[in-house]
View 1 (cartoon, rainbow, N blue to C red):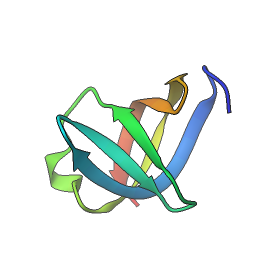
View 2: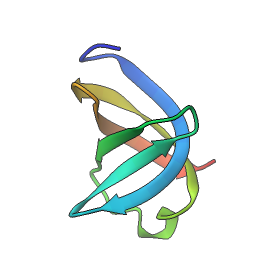
View 3: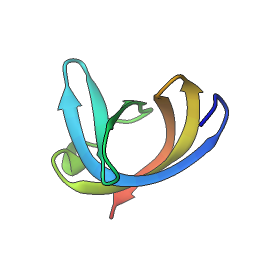
Length: 66
């Protein structure tokens, strides 16, 4: 995966420190840049759509319950 690649992934949305991460269904974790605080989805399985902006960091365009 490279910077600028489109991402569509499912996993568990978790709060970590002052931000959010996606615990991926396929294994691993991605730090997320979110434009809104999806408080109602924390700790739940979600689907994210976004773009990789840096090595392993995702700028999320959309997040919804999976």
